[in-house]
Each structure stands twice: as C-alpha cells, then as structure tokens.
Amino acid sequence: MPRYTVAIVGRPNVGKTTLFNKLMRIAGKGPFIPAITDSTPGVTRDRNYGVLVLNGKEVTIIDTGGFMPDSHSLDNSDMNAQVREQAIFALQEADLAIHLLDAKEGLNPSDIEMADTIRTMGKPCLSVANKVDSKEKEKYLLEFYQLGVSEVIPVSAMTGYNMDVLLDRIVPTFCADTLDNEEIPKVAVVGRPNVGKSTLINTLLGKKRLIVSPTPGTTRDAIDSVVRYYNREYLFIDTAGIRKRSKASEIEQYSILRAHKAIQRCDVAILLIEGSQGVVDQDQKIAGIIRDANKGVIIAINKWDLVSDPETAYKEIEKEVRAKIWFLEHAPLVTVSGLTKRRLTKIFPLIDSITAELSKRIPTSELNDLLRQNQGFLKVVEESARGLKVLYMTQVSVRPPHFVLFINRLSSLKRHHLRFFERLIRDRYGFVGCPINITVKPRRD
Image 1 (cartoon, rainbow, N blue to C red):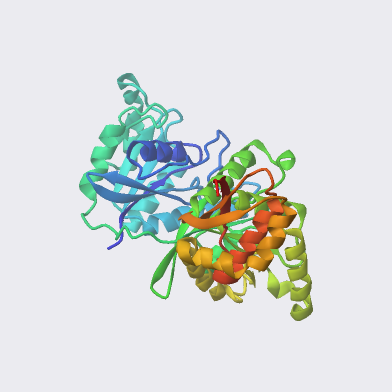
Image 2: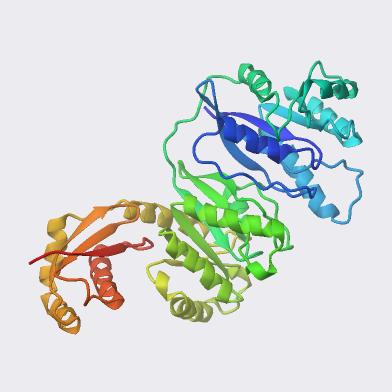
C-alpha cells in the first residue's frame, strides 16, 4: 500500500517551504537537504517530496509552489498557470491538505479560492495560520474562520511555535499502511540549464510531474520522482541546471549547491548533453563533478530527434565525447529524445547493470591470477618505474569498487601506472559505467 500523503498548499510566500523544512527537521527520515527558501514569491515552482516518521509510520509530505487564482494577471502568466497546475496535481495525490495561511497579511482572495478548491475536491484539510509565534498573536486568526473551517491552527514555521500541535493533528488522519522499504536505485539527471532534464523525467513518468519551460532555470530544487518500469521502481532526481557561477543569481547559487547534493545522493548520474550543440565547457565541468563524487554514470545525448543524418552525427558526437570527457571513458553512451521517447527504455537496463557493477566484488585470488597472466606488461611498468615491484592486489570495498595494490615502495609509482592497472581490471571484469578506485600501499617483499 502507498504511504499516506500530505500536501502543503497556499498562495505565494506564506511560508510553505519553510514549514516543509521545519517538519522534515523535526520528523524527517534520513539525512535532510533543506528546500530553497527566499523572500521572493515563486521560488518554489515544482512539487518537492519528503518523508516524515510519525508514530513509527512513514508519511509522504509534498511542498508546492504558490497557488494563484485563475483571474490573477501577471507578466509570466504561463509559468504561474503551470505552478497552479502543480498545486492541483499535489492535491489530487494527497490524502490530506495543509492549507497554509499568512497571519500577518490576513485573509486574501487567493486563500478563499484555495479553500473552495480543496472543498470541491473533497479533501480532508487542516487550516494552518503561519507566522504566529506567541499566544498574544493568535487573536489575528479570527478572520480566517470566514473560510468556513472548524479550526485554524496557529504555528510559526520559522521558530517552531506550536509545531507539536500540528503534528498531533496530522497523526490521527493517516492509516497504518506503509510502503515496503526496499532500497531502489537512485538516479540523478544532471546537465546544463534547458538541456531537457525535466522533459525526460516527465516522459518516463508518463505524466506531467515537473514544470517544463523553454526558460533556462525553471527547475530550482532537486525533485524526486519514482518511475516504475517492468515492475521495478527507480527514484529519479531532477536537478537544477548547473551553469557557470559568474552567471548565476543568488537563488541559482542555491540550486547549483542542491544539484551537487543530488549527485552525492545518487547511485547513478545521467549526464544529459544536447545533441545539436555537442560537448561544451560546462558539460566537461559537470562530468568532473560526477567523477569526483565516484558515482556510476551514463552519458545521454538528448534531443536526438532534432539531429539530421543520425548515423554520421553519432560517430562525430561519440568521438567528441570520448575526447573531451576522456576521464569518463567507462561511461556508456546512448542517444535519446525526452520529447519523442526515442530510445528512453535503453536507460533502464543500463541503470540495472551499473548498480550491479557498483556492488561487484572480485576475489583476491582472481586479481592475483590476473597479475600473473600479465607479467610481460607488468615488467614494462616495473622497469619504467625504476625499482618498482608489484606484490599483490585485493579489493577492499564496493559502491564504488575499491582496490588496494601492494608494492615495495611508493616513490616510483605514477598516475599513468594506476591507469594501467585500471585498464587490466576493466578489460577482464567490465565495470562499465562504474568508477574504480585504486590506492597503493608499500609493503616489504
């Protein structure tokens, strides 16, 4: 059975994301990366998901963008319509709505329309007035009873005032059923702004989960979505596009940090590159972040439907990728189109293969047989390193695979010698899409 789901909804800048962060800190499951908060209305545009543990049960909580009335005319009307749509989707998913109100600003026409929407959908609802940090300020709640609600719960998402009361109101509403906690592969989709990350995930989901816009920077948070393929689940993390820091606004700086964090969280990173533009400097920098994080990796060339003469173009892009991102030579390369669904199903077997490779362990006896079978090449390495003698090799850990090479002394070993041993391992055991770490230790013969 699915987890009980609670959606936080309300008009812009009432403190929905601040409340989401506070709830996650109090009752969140596992390490928590705060969602972006800012005084600028509209910072949260997509739905952001978290998991709370209440009375020993897991509850999914959804943070949404600011709900705007249909009649509200703003410069970016299309974007506001999409944000409104996302709030509606969140309500459709939810078993319980938290309608967040602003006690400082009072009742607003957007609050009335939001309340009517929740009532029309037949959703159970808790009306919560934010920015109340003392008993004396609870007198400002009276006007909110015009919404026809039986109770308005005063809280301060910033200070934590009355949060225990809010949690106590949530607990009686949810049922005992929870999801199986089986670990599923975590996949971060990363790339430059507007390269098609959200479109790709929406296509995989088969529904409009993330806002898609031709405007670069639409996605500001790292957003989690569960994709099911042939009865197996995959957690996809859509990230804000990583751009040069000199060109990033303050809010985008937060987004870049979260993209880095998303890579740290994932098992496999999909580096999305635009097929018509090829590999640019920023693609190389993002590839370097993936390499430094020691994550499994797939390089996906997106928007392949826009490429003329695909056969010739593939040879050129493959050559360019291998030349400019040579340090990820172990990464499989696949061409896709998030818009037309072209070759998207190729991604799932690659994810399965890479996650298996990350956990693969090679017996020490096999590794030393490998060294013995390559004595000729080994002697060339030892002679070039002047006095180096390789003793034996063993694997000490997985995720990612980590090997230790024991030698007689450290001073002679160079980086290119380690690449030789990595090549030996990959030629025999594969580890496609999987990073390999090799460290050396001196040991007397």
